[in-house]
Length: 153
Image 1 (cartoon, helix red, strand yellow):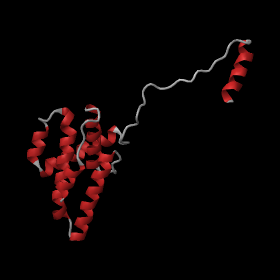
Image 2 (cartoon, one colour; image 1 turned 90 degrees about the vertical axis):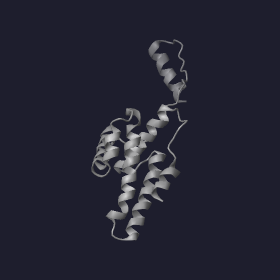
Image 3 (cartoon, one colour; image 1 turned 135 degrees about the horizontal axis):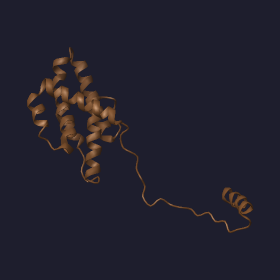
Image 4 (tube, one colour; image 1 turned 180 degrees about the vertical axis):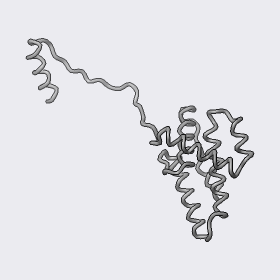
């Protein structure tokens, strides 16, 4: 009905000329970005992971400069994740708190690989790297959640 009313209005304005509305269809569906992390958040997460590597894993920090730029974010996220998990025993006072932190890491990995990372720097950088990997390989390659869970176990 709305199209007919608009067509009548146009006919009056144009003096009885033919009025047709054509329905157009998109030829390509654009999917929204999987993550909602801004470039500033990704840059901040990258700096956090670099700082973590600089403090606790100097060989990995030195090696990251030789990584190809496309893989550097994934490398930083994976190494920083490994450091966080390894430091859990040193930074917690009770086993209960330690198991809660490890469960948080499991949940953060699951959410990051699903495309909705929590506001935690390692998860943000990992989600960005996973999204970049899927974009570069046209969805044929992705990170395996089970390998990250094996690091935690």
